[in-house]
Length: 281
Image 1 (tube, rainbow, N blue to C red):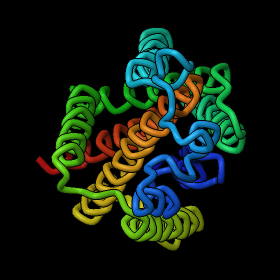
Image 2: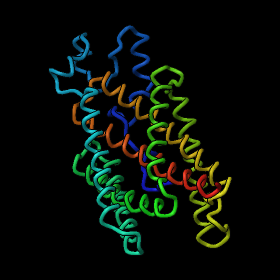
Image 3: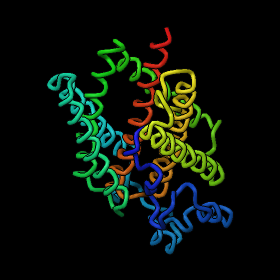
């Protein structure tokens, strides 16, 4: 699992430091007959007793904004990965560059995750360095398990599409309880993986411990992918609420940032899972 993914500290669209979709205040507003009560982006409209103005006339975020920024961010990841794959042959040097790129990407992502406003340069910089890292490890996996990156991309697309379908169908309701339980499981997973890493580093657990290329490693990988799907539902809820509440247009970059973090997580775990199943053939 990518330890450089700061999804656990990612800000939502609301300015009270919580996910807009997870706050009780908007729901209370609906109960009072005013769906815009306590909306951090519509305070002036609420005071006037009117709904927020249309995004097109106020510079507020729309789905088109989210799609465009997401395409730019993911496109940067793809370009960085393609260049790294083409220009960096599998070697000790390329592994070092991949490690360095992952560190830089982690730093940029953490800086952005603690900022109150999105900084496009940080987000695109993160995407570029993350792309270099993904390109090197993808080439490494492909050299041993031919076609693994392509299968991982297809798997990532399948998980994303299925999660979106389930979310839009209403089979999953992203509530405060759902978010708390999911986050507790995710944090516990990260802590267990951190302990496992230490045990492997000190030689207590051999062959990668819980992250081995055996059945146990496959189970852990599946759990990690399911957690990635969980974070996708949080991303979808953030985007949906941000548009509904009239979030500023520039916060589409936050949506793109969150989606990219989650998709990278799923892709890396899918890549490992493909390799595990290929090893057992």
